[in-house]
Length: 161
Image 1: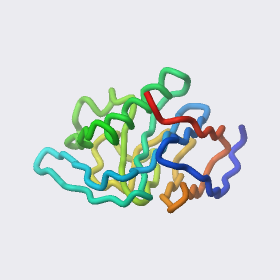
Image 2 (image 1 turned 90 degrees about the horizontal axis):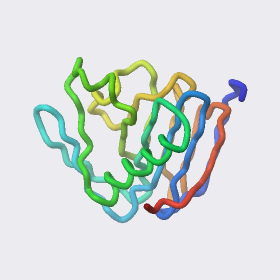
Image 3 (image 1 turned 180 degrees about the horizontal axis):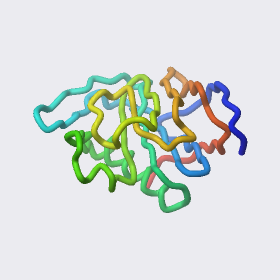
């Protein structure tokens, strides 16, 4: 893999998950689908997120391999199918350093390696590994638009447990 960066439109439907496999991290993306209401829990409040079917749920793992891909699928399944809330930890929370996977939901997500995992309440930014820093994923009616995509393996897999 080299460090070239590109933009790409990829078709994705509700029954699929997109995997971006890097050298040190993995990103998984699913469409929100027909469910439009998600809950974001912070230390002080509960926020209701109203999302469109074209919007995305994006998960980022700080490692690679089958174990982490299965974890990404499980986390995304819990959020989308089991209605698990998105949890935002307080700043400087001890668990931040132990989070293997973090999640964001919305129309557009930008990955950043400059934020603390699990503590960012705005759903338009998500902590990711260095190689995915600046990656932007936006939901479209037929799939996902990726900007600043580094050289990585891209796989579209079935999204079912």
